[in-house]
Every structure is written in structure tokens, then in C-alpha cells.
Image (cartoon, rainbow, N blue to C red; front, side, top):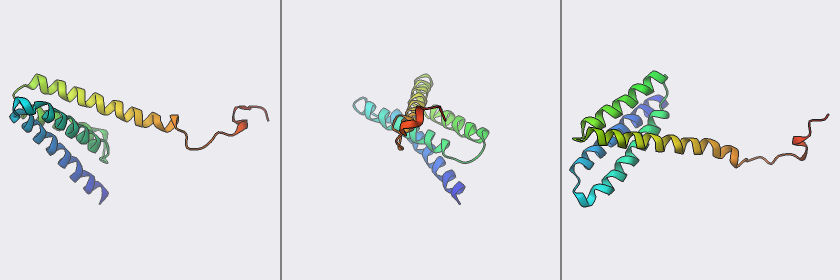
Length: 120
């Protein structure tokens, strides 16, 4: 059941990213920056959903390729969309790295006084 729910979540997130790409394409010049921000967030959500989907690495790579293909296909500026995808992927990876290292920077358990004492 959990894998079915994750599958629904990932396809919903992918479709939202594609819709965000279409919205950016149709946005007036005054609404472009807001549409770009929405698309970046939709892409981040899609990347997170893909990461949280159970399955093989090949399955996740296929989903990521699908996001890329669909978002680029929905845009008339393929190069600009590729840059936006790359930027969103880098943002996602940086945030994931920060989240991973935060566990070590903010240790939940205090260290004992003898933790640096190697003598028995």
C-alpha cells in the first residue's frame, strides 16, 4: 500500500511540474518571476517524491528522465528550461546535503566526558 501511495505522489508531483512549465510559458512578463518560483518549487517537490519512491535506482532514474523530457517538451525555450532544471536539481541536492549534515551538527545526545579518553 505504501508503494502505491508513493507512486501516486510521484506522478502527481511530476504532473504539477509539467503544469508549472506550461504556466511559465503562458505567464505575462509581469508574472514570469512568480511562475518561475512556482516551477522551481514544483520541480523540488517532484525530485523529493522521486527520491522517496521505493524501487530500484533504475526506476528512479527513469522517473527523473521523464520529468526532464516532459518539462522541456512543454517549453518553447528548451535551453532555458534545461538551465532551470539543472538549477532546481542543484538546489534539491544542496538542501538534501544540508539536511543530512544537520543531524551531525546538532547532535541529539550529549557526549560523555570520557568520550575522548582512549585509555581503559
